[in-house]
Image 1 (cartoon, one colour):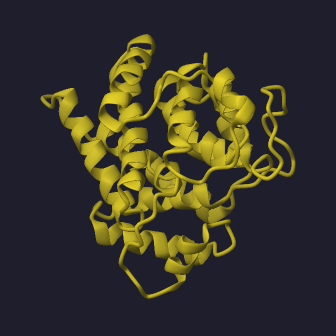
Image 2 (image 1 turned 180 degrees about the vertical axis):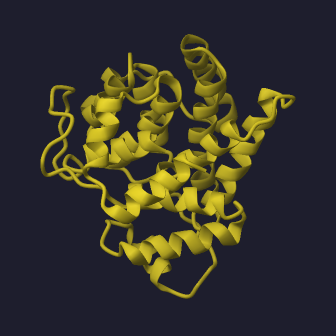
Length: 269
């Protein structure tokens, strides 16, 4: 969860001012949290309230109305403010940017006698529910599931084995192309709010990383929808590397009280 929030905050100032380099200050004074953070918190609350479809709908609308100017896409912003509870067939990357608590929940709630496969199945099921109440297009659900799956690989295996599993499994399970390097992607990559145009690139940013901070820098260096790319990459990177306390504490300073309190409830549950 914190990996996504950190990626969002770091990427916030580059979303509309893309850079194609890894050489930049990790945090700037004008960084801020966006809808990526707000909806990640909403997912965590929905899981604590039961993890059913209605819990996600209620949490998204509650937190979206608390932060109406956080930068939502047009369709999602309208859905938040409406009384409509039906999904609207979105394939946007919002389903993947917010999904990290689903994998965390599945991993941390496993029992001693559970097989790793059981937790992976649970993570994907929760991811699909979290996505499907709004982003019920197959690409929207797939983006959320793929992100959660990569997180579970990072939790379940050593770093090198996890990266190898992701490279092998993601094309087979989700149809994403994992053959292109960051150097292949970066020169022509442009702003793209679709899952299919964001999630594979974010996964690649993790695969080529050496630590948590390097993963975030990789994602930002691609350009595009920087905060969401980095939120997705940061989700996977946190599962693989953890987050250095210095980076976590700095990110906390950009959060207001309701968001910080929600994070504490999640971590202390």
